[in-house]
Image (cartoon, rainbow, N blue to C red; front, side, top):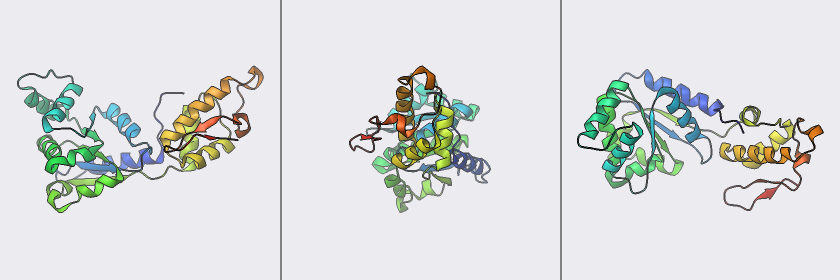
Length: 244
């Protein structure tokens, strides 16, 4: 499978929200909240954006403390963890205009949002974007009354939607090493409920099956009929479903 990023409708939505945040009036209101179903392509989209603009991206952990979080960010920036590293990190963020992305950001709300408070202090000084990626069950906590100092800084909220059939066709066309027939694309769309993580897994299994076909037909589009008995999907902890 090709290792490239596909600009789906959700990626386009995210880009629009980022542009909206970049044009904000109050410089401290640089928080972008991202949410959506598991497997919708949020992390992949954020990783691509981070690589494009030079943002630093970390994944929050259940046992995070502000210090541990700062150490992870500093290490991502290539800094040595020694006396004065935190100040050096903050200066680097300011001078480099480096945005910070936190995946699994629900964990930053623990202990009276201590980690989020630390992040707010950094990005208030740097006027850079802070992009927080929440699971749907967690994002409502960001709007709690006791977190008004944070939710007043939210400049944009990006809700990843269910991908369209066109999105799935685009991903299949750009990532698959073998052509995939439209009927099979539709089958993938239906059976995965358009969750991009599952779509990409399906593409990998289709490519494996394509290599087993006779040489004479190896470059023709893969169809649903070519995958009879193949375990193509494993959906949300359920048993793997065969295509037949």
